[in-house]
Amino acid sequence: MTSNAADRTMIRHAMSAPYLSREEEARLGSRWRGSDDQNALNQIVVAHMRLVISMAGKFRNFGLPAADLTQEGYAGLLEAAARFDPERGFRFSTYASWWIKASMQDYILRNWSIVRGGTSSGQKALFFNLRRLRAKLARGDVQLTAEAAHQEIANALGVGLADVQRMDARLSGGDVPFETPLGSGDGQSLSDVLRSEDPLPDEQAESLIDGERRAAWLRSALKHLNGRELEIIHARRLSDESETLEALGAKLGISKERVRQIESRALEKLKLALTQGPNGRERRAFL
Image (cartoon, rainbow, N blue to C red):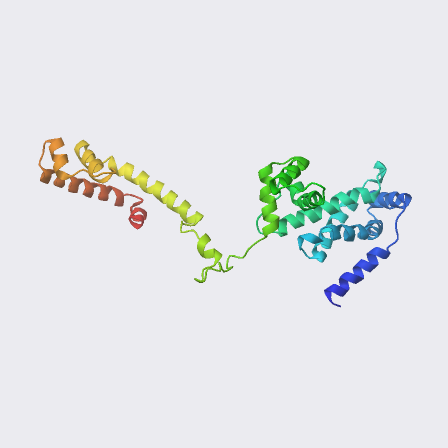
């Protein structure tokens, strides 16, 4: 049996299942809650599968498989049946509708787009009601501009105008594959213009950690220099604008050759401090 035939068979069985009276619901619910009667639970679920199928039809415009929506709704129906308390006096269909709808909506939000959306209650209401409200405004006697219609929807749902505009753009556009050609004739795709040349996040983190480690090693090694050596290394190697040998010699009252000698000796001391000790091998690998 094909999946379509199986779906049609399931729908026929669901629609032909007998309705339960309020008294039967209460009796079956009490059996399930009182003695964990699985047969009672099954009777409640089977009698209300038509509710799942009806709800799935209301969400068909989101382009997701009806079978998947039905499966998610069935999970919500089972959750409702497991939690149903007949002593509260509510009909099971009223109670189950919320669970079925919530399960389907959660599935749609997770699978309608690769971009996650509708995380807050306001965003969810906007996602599931925007098309309906937009169509209602379009049928009105007064023709509104796009911005005016968006403002009406924002007022009705209690969300911001910018939220409505963004959601409308998402619902109108849909997802576009990265390899979609741009149509410019040069063979470029969307991924070519969206690709970032920046390092990946893990590479950035690794570089940051390594940089902090090297900086700590350098601070420790600089402690091995005397005052004049430290001043020359800072001026020649650690400043944004390196000073010339002549300028440093004039500042320190020595020749530029003497500055070069002190710098060379200081660099040797730094190299020795960085590559010796318990972490010398690790430091040499980084340097």
